[in-house]
Image (cartoon, rainbow, N blue to C red; front, side, top):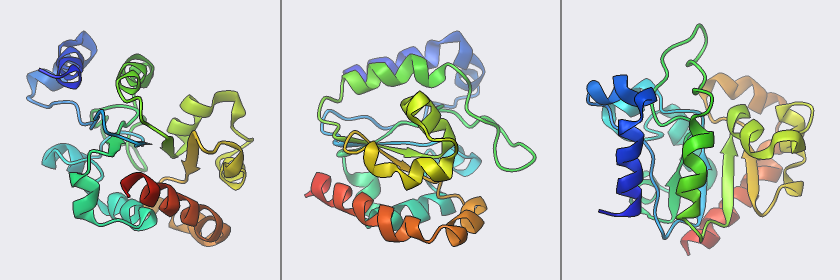
Length: 193
């Protein structure tokens, strides 16, 4: 059994995840010693949990487009790790999904990242990931954090969440596609090349 399988078993036996484990739901993440990029998102959505495939929704389609890679490359490569802020679907809220549980990433991300020494860039999709990883280094809001993305490179690259709920933000901030996405594509190409 690999270190990642051992950690997965620990996650499943953690009392905080008992209801998911009893329901036959395994934690949804991907980690590999070969990983050079880690994508930190919010938490798996309902469809991702049902299909056991992270980013398996319109948000994932947009993210792969932003990264400049195919669906097949995205899922087959061991060079891209997937570490959502919570490895389980948290449920539906009035708009979007319930936030990831507090304390989950704090407990499991450091252990997983320690076993992935070749990670060059952690891609932070959305506010939850940015607040956790950047902390006080975040700007006054998500837009300003993204506008100042270069100050976090090469360790971190903050992105707006690729959710369809953010189409309005993308239209109001055309600089994101012009300035940030070419950097993301270059990071991905370099790590996969």
